[in-house]
Every structure is written in structure tokens, then in C-alpha cells.
Amino acid sequence: MWTVIYIAQSDKQAEKIQSRLTEQGFLVKVRPSHVSKQHEILVPESELDEVQEALNDILHSAYE
Image (tube, rainbow, N blue to C red; front, top):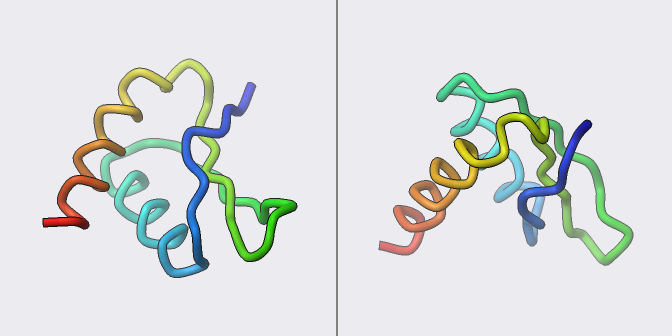
């Protein structure tokens, strides 16, 4: 089952997150949200804990 792990605020942000997670070997899907131009980042539920750690690192490095 796929689970939403993050809601990106733009196409560019969604693509960057998807690319970085995919580079680390995770399965990632992106789909448009029903709100404005947001995009949902989805991962398999079985990878949720590992992906959360990787996503935190990605988001943290984006704001440094």
C-alpha cells in the first residue's frame, strides 16, 4: 500500500524530492494534490520509517 509522506508546494520541489529519494533506492510516486499546485509524495508503507529519515535529511539540507 502507498502512503503519502509529504506534500510538496510546487512541481520543482516534488521532482527534487522524488529524484533524491529514488537515488537512495526508494520507490516513490508523485501525484497532484486536490489543493492548488501541491503534489503528494507517496512511498510504500513498508519503507515508511526509512524514507522518513531520508526525507528529513533532504528537507534539512534544502534550508541550510
